[in-house]
Length: 212
Length: 334
Image 1 (cartoon, rainbow over the protein chains, first blue to last red):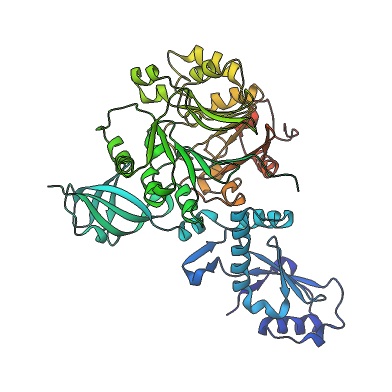
Image 2: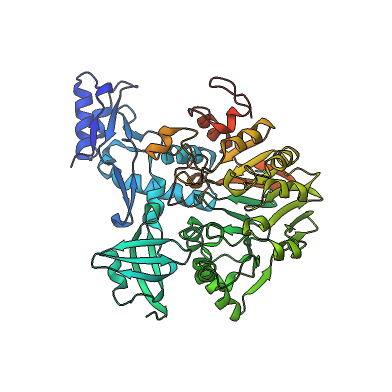
C-alpha cells in the first residue's frame, strides 16, 4: 500500500538517478549502488498519506491534524519526517508507520519522565502541534472508578446521576453494563471516558445500595 | 545542568476545575484540589510505577470541580494518601456532597487521616529550605458561620521565609484574599474562581477593585474551561491583572480571545503534553498545564513559556496582553 504521496509543490524534474532512488524507496530494499553519482542536494518532498499513527497494536491512535511531510534526500540516501527528528535510510521507508509510532512513544515516554533533551523538546513540541494529544490520552487512559445512581430506565437509554451530581443519559450498548441495576440503585463502576466526558465503556459494576 | 529544584509545582489543565500537584523534595506529592470526575490527574497517577506517595490532598472547598475526582483517587491510592484536608462548609447529607465524600468516610474508617482545613494548619514545612505550605483561611468561626460555601474557600499559601510565593484561594472572593495576605503580594496567584471572582460584580465590586490592586501578583494562572457557561474568565478581571503588570496565563482558550481556535478545537499550545502530563477531556488548551520550580526561594517559570507567549501574540484578541495596551505587532511584554 502506498503511504507517501508526492508533494505537488516540490515535484522535481525527471532524472534517471532520482527514478532509481525512488524505486528503491518504493520497494524498501537496499540498492545503494544507484546513489553513487547523485547530486549532493537532490531532495524530494512527500506527504504521508495516513491520518493516524497506531500504537499498542491499534488500540491507541494518534490522530494527525495535518499531513506529515517526508523529505527524501537521495544523496545521503536518507528520509526525514519534518519536525519529528526522525531520520532513516530511504530503503526503510516501508516501515515508516512503525517508525512514527516508535518515535511518538519514545518522545511521550521521555516527556513523561522529564528526560527530554533540548533537541527532543523541540521535536516533541512540533509533534504535539501536528498530533491530537487529547485523543491519544483518551485512548491510552484506563477506566476510572466512578459512583452513580440509576435515575431512570428507558428502552434506549439509562439515566444516571454521577457522584458529582451531573446527570447523563447513557445509550446502548454502553448502558448494557447497567442491565442488572434498577431505578434507585447506587452503584460503583469503572468507566472509560471519551472526549467531553462521554462514557465509552462501563465495566466492573457493583451495587453500593439497593434502590426501590 | 543546574541543581534540582526544591519544589516542582504543576498547575494542571483540567477544564473548568482546579488542580495543582506539588512535588516535594522527598518525592512525595502534595495535591491542592483534584479536579472534576474524569480528571486527567487520575490517568497520570494510574500511570505512575511505583505508585506515588501522597503527603496530602487539600481541597480548597468541596465543590465537584475541586473534589469530583476524589473517589477515583482514593479507590486507586487510598493506602498511599497520608492526609486529606477539607472544609466543613455544608451539611454532610447534602447532595451531591454526600456522594463525593462517601468514599472519604469509608476510607477514614479504615485509617485514612482526614483533617479540618482551617487557619493556622501547616501542611508541610522545611526549615532547611525555608519553605512552608499552610492554610491562610478560613478561621474556625468564618468556616462555621459562612452562608455560601464559596465565601470560605480555603486559602493555601506557599511561603519562603515570610515571602509569599504562591497563593491558591480556590473560589474565595478577591478582597478576602487581599485582606489575608496584605501587605504582601503573591508571586503566583491561582484564579481565584476560574478568573471570575465572586466579588467581581455586585455589592462588593468596590472592595474587589481595591483588593485586586493591593493583591496584584507577578503571575496569575487561571484554570478555565473553554466552554463553561459562567462567562469565566471575566475579561475585565484579566485586563485588570494585566494592567497592573501581572502576567496572566490561562489553561484553556475561550472565544473571547480567539474564536477560530475555540471553534476548531485547535490548541494554542499543548502544555500538558509538553510537560508529560495528561490532557483534559474537555476544552481547548491555550497554555495547557503550566509548571514553576522553586529554587532557593526563587520562582522559575518553565521553558515553554516563551513559545506559548509567541503564539498568544498571534491570537485575535488576547485578553492577557491587551490589558497592558499591547497591540498586534508590538514586542512581547515579557
